[in-house]
Amino acid sequence: MSADYTLGLTTQPNELTQLSLDVQGRIPSWLRGTLVRNGPGQFEMGQHHIRHWFDGYAMLHAFHIADGRVSYSNRFLKSKAYLNDQATGKLNYIGFAQDPCRALFRKFMTLFRADPGNNAVVNVTRLGDEFIAMTESPLTVRFDPRTLETLGVLDYDDDVAATLATAHPHYDSARGMGVNLMTEFGLQTKYQLFGITATERRKLTEIVSKDIAYMHSFGLTQRYAVIAQFSLRLGSAATVLLSGRPFIENFKFSPTTDTIFTIVELDTGRVVANVPTDAFFAFHHINAYEEGDEALIVDISAYPNADLIKQLYMEPLRRGETVDTGEFRRYYVPLNGKRATYERLVDVRVELPRINYRRNGLPYRYVYASASQPNQPTFLSQLAKVDTHLRHVTLWQEEGCYPGEPVFLSAPDSSAEDDGLVLSVVLDARRGTSFLLILDAASFGEVARAHVPQHIPFGFHGQFFGGVV
Ligand SMILES: [Fe+2]
Image 1 (tube, protein in one colour):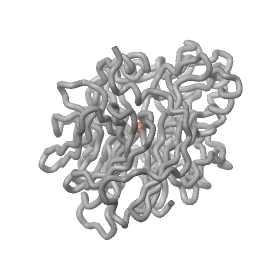
Image 2 (cartoon, rainbow, N blue to C red; image 1 turned 30 degrees about the horizontal axis):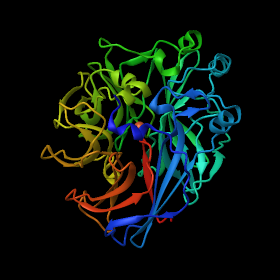
Image 3 (cartoon, rainbow, N blue to C red; image 1 turned 45 degrees about the vertical axis):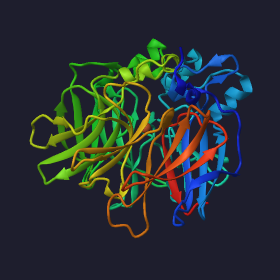
Image 4 (spheres, rainbow, N blue to C red; image 1 turned 180 degrees about the vertical axis):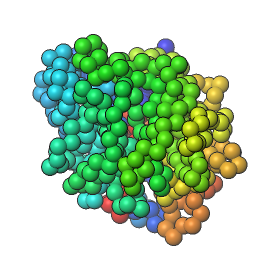
């Protein structure tokens, strides 16, 4: 039996352009800009089926909002991966858990260089005047946020040789630069932090590691980057080359291998501490900040193991099997040589967490996330606002509805941390369509919704680009 949310795991072949949507409720007049979301839009190519949710072909969705009205556009990202596979009718690009074409895969791994045919399906961001789609590769794909037209790879004139990069770069407002974590495969594995603009990548630090931790995101405080080397590890890059297995299936979770928080000072690139803690896994850091000079607070949507990766293959997902959701863990990371410890802040399980990004790296209070209940391990069917001070959760839910990542936007001239709106794309399984949900961030009550006349497959991440309409 399939679950009612499987529509969210189904290809959407229709590309719409600036379609005016029916709006219920009143959208505040100050809300002006475009919410761009990224995620898989197609789960097969010819006779070939995508194996893992993370490997669907990227589709961009844009909600253009101005004067209380909303229009919607969606386009496949015309990456080299998509165009090549479409031309051959074969599923050939190297993905997260895709069974690799052996010849191509060997070439990729032998050269230890990123595959130029990347399917940038995970996130989007803005670097100066450039808007880019990202996956876990240093190669990002430019697009026009107004038309969603694909504009080609963002080229840098440098010798960056990293194999992997996170699709969760931070913005360091004090230093005026994007920051991202990359991993270079080679005879030695090197974790590298880069300061990034649209035209330049400057290496801030390089850390040689004996093994390779799979890391999807990292934390940033005012002074430090927090690199959490989770316990899902790969002995060496050569393993990937020799095994011929899909990329992520070479990594093994070890419950006896400590997770290590590597703390890097941003101004000097110096590693100030390597702080061990009991084994765990996560995709998403929530926020991190300094507690004086002695410790860091690192909030993470965390899992006791890496089973989630297996649960997100298309077959078990479509069968409606259990999908774990993360615990809201607050890690206390001492800088004096002791081990890190954690406590679970709330019972509700959270994923795809977002905050008021003005509070990134600082003490803060509120988190917005997709959520599920601890005794109901199913696909994300709620939105949660977590008050970390009161340890209180406010929920939004509706029967048959599956909300995606909630994006927080500050109101103009706001002073309160939660003065603003929360935007989430929701699959309504009963109607067979999706809608943009707009909540008041303070009360978590509905402000408005805009109905899309077709379904939007479950996506990963998105950003609101203010003033871009
Ligand atoms: Fe992510």
